[in-house]
Image 1: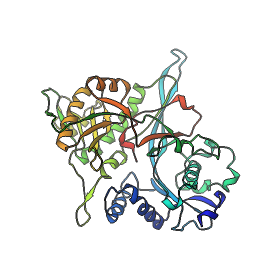
Image 2: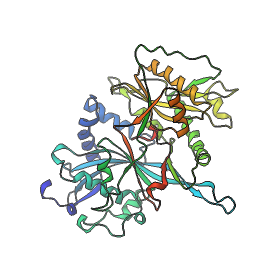
Image 3: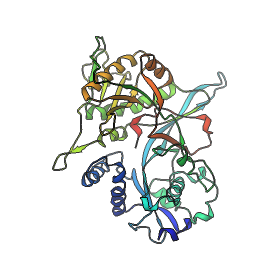
Image 4: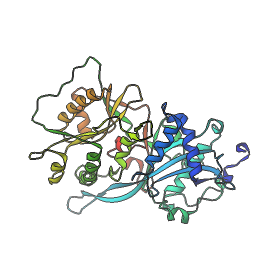
Length: 409
């Protein structure tokens, strides 16, 4: 069947429940990391009921024949997560010529689980799927004026709007196939205006089994964060990020970020769940962050009741990789609080028996401070963060800030 189809014969469709299950069964081969298929499928069923995915936020897409859109013999598939974002655009005043940036709420998407079964590879299907994805996510005003004739007819715009799509300011993905493929997935057959790798670095510390790491004597008081603490903290952090965007704005740059609330930051913790024999979810740890307690606060609730933003670090665990890694999911710090947070992270790393601690993003002055304390920074070799911007701004004028693990998908 597949060899006889032209691109015009194919389109991108929201998956039926049966197609969604088939898609997950296919990519379990790639991403289950030894997890039995029934657990892999059950995990995704549990996760899709959570806030980050519910109410149409998560959609599985299939590339399928127009005349048989519900077939289980679709060619390839992917997932999109609709998420809240902020954009900070430069604003100029007559007096100073530069003023605080203008903060705007936006809708953006994370793209995940791009998978083509081996029998359908090397035929251009995945590239075509990703090209069509722009025509699903972006407003038509951000796309070429005409849909490529060799692709047939475009996805129905009224249908897309009715389910809350065709409204993206940007979309991101995390490439495990290098920098070039997703960039080549543009909005028409010849453009290379797809997803551009941005900020794919890691600042890390490797632990040796013989390292002795003990809590340093300090006046800083920490509270460790449970799963429920993390959710409460992220509700506040979404507001603090807006304030930080104003504080750390850069003249002439349009900055953008996802927000960690509404279940987004919780996803990178909950997705590593294991299961009891009766398929009850259980997490591998009870601690997922550390917050510096201000004077007068004894627990997180006390600290959140105070008016000032907090300094904290949160994390997730990659325990089925080598090396076992604690990945920082969100950092909120300045140069006065970062050293204590770094020390606390290494104590946690020893408790969790990991061999590496890594950050995906730090503001430049914080990265320099970490490096002066022995941390190293390198380019990442996998999970390369890449962004497609749907707007008038040029690539060199854009900056993805808080490009951290909390928004990975």
